Image (cartoon, rainbow, N blue to C red):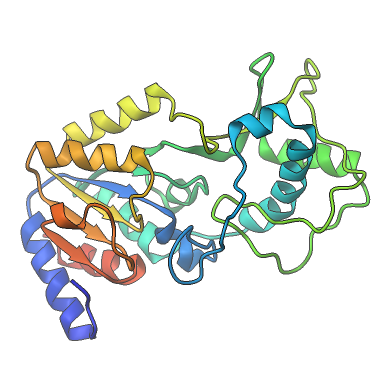
Length: 279
């Protein structure tokens, strides 16, 4: 249902609060919850078209593709890391502190839920905060890898304004002369701790998400069009249990026909309003 006026939006949010009253709520969030923080969504208004996304096979097998990834990733990460949690992130953290929300399952890699104060966060697609060596398993803080990149490539400069993707990537003008960072322990290949296209969500993360959902009495999908299979699988599990399903997303989603309530509005408007109404 589209809320074309503040009055209509208030009415829908009030209905949602009535449906969810007294229930333990799990959240499934996507890129749409972070747009108010300056990070674009993958789809919908304002999104950046990705005609050639990085796949795990290309990353592992193509040195030029790896170089392009690290140049763009570094240029974007500096801006990406400056993003701040918005009202939607803060509302979910507040609802967790009052016992209404059991936790957040997020498809985002931006870390904004944790920075907003949510404590039970399952990052099913990983996080940009960490980088892993694929040879020896050593884990690095992304800030340390960024320092290595700048030491290896002292000519590189981060522009004032960059056109970010939801994963912090930027399309670089050139990759010529760029030296790719390596593991400082064994010299092995590094990879950000994120799930690439063509890569499976680690089983332990998905099981943790399923466990959180089983301990909850309702599910809210916030800012996700549910194109990625991991999100759809979780919604299907909620559907099998016949627990209330609420979808908050500006664009239509694959699961709209299953939802008890759909709200075509921004999460930054809906979630703070819902927080105020839950008893």
